[in-house]
Length: 227
Image (cartoon, rainbow, N blue to C red; front, side):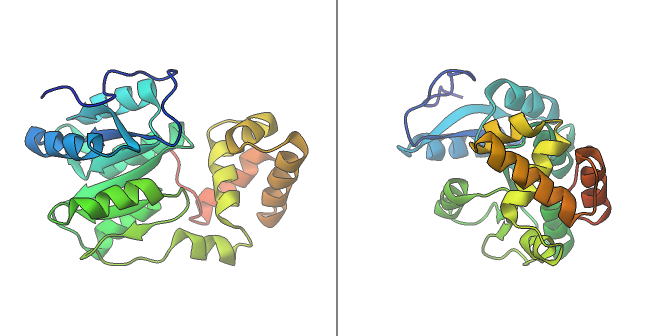
């Protein structure tokens, strides 16, 4: 595969303002090449790497810390949704979009429960994928055309008295961040971050971040680690 725009850049180097970094994971090299070319042709997207197996996907994600990972549901050495779950537990600000050749309601449910931001069919329009890359949000789940809809994670959050930003706080706490880390990642001042964390704890009836994370997992509001 020839080099793609930005593919040689590594984490820690400054991207252009407004650009989103994208990691592509697909075990079919031709599909990966076509996706990389499509992403690289967009002025606001930068391909920071391509992976064809689970081990490389995780390693490259840790090295580049991409804004968005496009993950095939089947990789040569692992389940793409399982890899997405592991990746999201480690990189709380990254979003994952799952690609699939065959979609059913069970697969859509698994992708949503793993924390993915969307599920897109491989035989769909590339513009749909590019639009979702730009608009993907942690805590929300979007099904592409032809994909069965599932109950939105936001619906479960609302029932628990939480909102999408509370879900982001939970994921940061699950990743081991303290109030200072939450403030830094969400770009909040220290007092506002402290209030956010306390609000999440109160909604879940928890007395510590650890028990809040445990309660969220038990209630299906958060997925961490391997299933």
